[in-house]
Amino acid sequence: MIYLYVDIKYDFGLNRDMQYTSQALKRINHLVSELDQVYHLYALKYGLSDSEFAILYTLSVEGGECALSELVALSGIPKQTVNSALRKMEAEGTVYLTENGKRKKNVNFTDKGREKAERSVNDLIEIENSILNKWGKERVEQYIRDTEEYNELMKGGLGNASVK
Image (cartoon, rainbow, N blue to C red):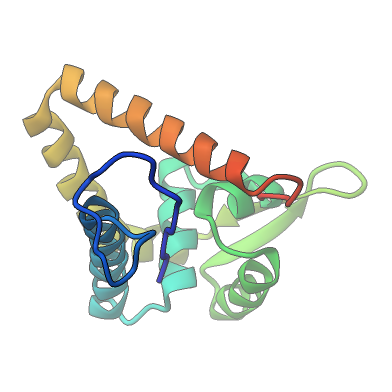
């Protein structure tokens, strides 16, 4: 669960018991957690761990093949967790790794993995696309801009800490 605490200079309905957490910030935290829970429930619906689901999802939107380093970055899952999930998925026959130069690897769907993704994450992707279509181009573009800015400002608040 992600909690965001900031020193707010403007009055967004500050909660006086926790002077640094506004009502708006609490609502944002709740919505982020609620969306995380929705994705978790989709994973459970198909008998997948969150990390397996995220890997299948990322590979699906990347066309069935992705550099391992990019998979880690796009999925938002720690590298060690991705590697553990990939070992399990390789043993099940849903993905395989290929060499991409001397020190890099690609993650690829097997036929079984592609079928598994079609039965699971592709349902979610269809729902997501229908939501974006309902919102329309302008609203989607504004959401993307706002989210990118929010993420960059949050990363900037970390100072010298590395965000991967």
